[in-house]
Length: 171
Image: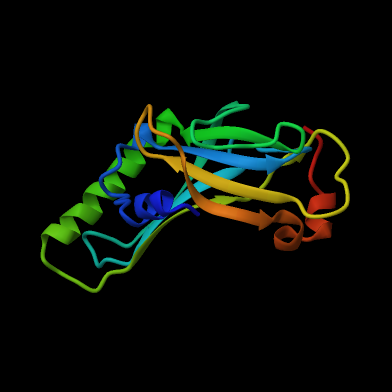
């Protein structure tokens, strides 16, 4: 990961990101694809009531593919798909952000939280070959910005296993 990407990720305050501006780029190995709901954004906080707890899982809507500013992919072996929070879920994330901000403003301490993106499904539009199936995740927090790496070089074959890959449906 580049120093600029590390600085961007370490300085990311998930509670200050406008939910409608958040976008995720999934770099997937050919022949794998994501469909809406196959990638999710998870927000958790163990803050006490009335601020929490929060355990929010939002399916990402896959809106486009082929390219993402700041992401390089080999079109022969990789595909880029862009996901965003669905319009219907934007208010859920805004409400969670407000609860966490209220907790922070209360002066209370000790709560822990997380903000993650995960892949929990997919489909295939061809035969899956031998060897590593490298995937990566990048994020953008404002329109017009480049995507920056969040998760780099994960082998889906090792992560999911052969049985799960064999069960992937056709796209």
